[in-house]
Image (tube, rainbow, N blue to C red; front, side, top):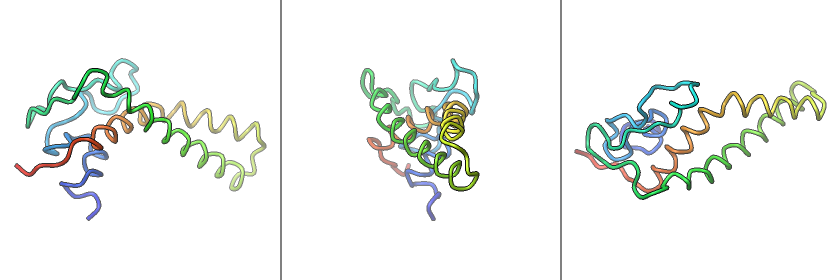
Length: 124
């Protein structure tokens, strides 16, 4: 199974600790509130893994965020121009709207992917 406990995708999709897959990674459930979008627990509530592995650790998540943004922009452009026959300006507006609406999800997803690149699951 692709989404079963013990896989990195499980941790990313469910917002769980990358080491134990039990504790929540973010303090708040998904929200559009700007100050709560990326607030993390300092440590995993279950296994006590320190989430901020080193100072400014999540700056690297910007690279993941960039990749997701580019992929989302290309997909939105292709759908808007090929499926809906939008003009170039309309496609640009659709891309801008998609990026703004999905920004909170993108921020959270990029942090989850980034920490899962460095921390592996350990059965307890």
